[in-house]
Amino acid sequence: MRLHHHPFSSNARRAVMTAHHLAAHHAGAPKVELVLVDLGKGQQRSPEYLKLNPMGRVPTLEDGDFVLTESQAIMIHLAQSTPDQTVYPSELRARSRVNQWLFWCAHHFAPAVAVLNWERVVKSLVGAGPEDANEIARGERLVAENLRVLDQHLEGRAFLSGDALTLADLSVSTPLMSIGPARLPIENSKNVLRWFASIQELPAWKATS
Ligand SMILES: N[C@@H](CCC(=O)N[C@@H](CS)C(=O)NCC(=O)O)C(=O)O
Image (cartoon, rainbow, N blue to C red; front, side):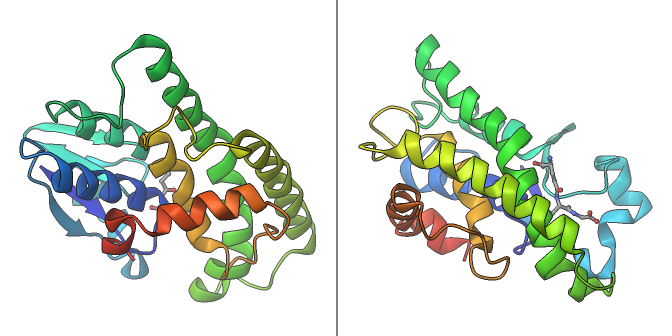
């Protein structure tokens, strides 16, 4: 398989982390070749890349002639391509709970963090003008709301779903790579910080840092 990514992309990182984690734990995991899409040079908008991913975003997975976009869908595809994997449980309720957090991440958490990441990190890198105070306020409010939910859920829990690492943890953790650069309002989210510290110890996190 070929996985198109960029190392600064939290959306790509959750797919790359999943590939690393599966390869480290399961001999039958798919062999995944990483392909760099240089976002700084605009390669995501090249005609060849847009044929793979019409949104012009990373990540994109090529599994033979099957092309898949959207990071959480790619994580599931990688897990389901791996015999005996445990990060995407097969029992119905356990799997549904993982799905809940994957959708929460895609619909709520990642877009909220993206507001502050755009305003405080990317805008200056791409010369898109000064920070917008209204957008910063909106992003701070959204991130704080999401972190409150996440922090409450992680009270007394080591992992987001069940008692072992799942795709939920690999997905929800990656937007937090912007804690420093995007100045996420996270200092009061003690459970999130504890959980995130444990995720940062994973070989899959370190391999993608
Ligand atoms: N929902 C998509 C979001 C992908 C996304 O927004 N990727 C960003 C990087 S984090 C990107 O490729 N941006 C390039 C651009 O907007 O030009 C996913 O989860 O895969």
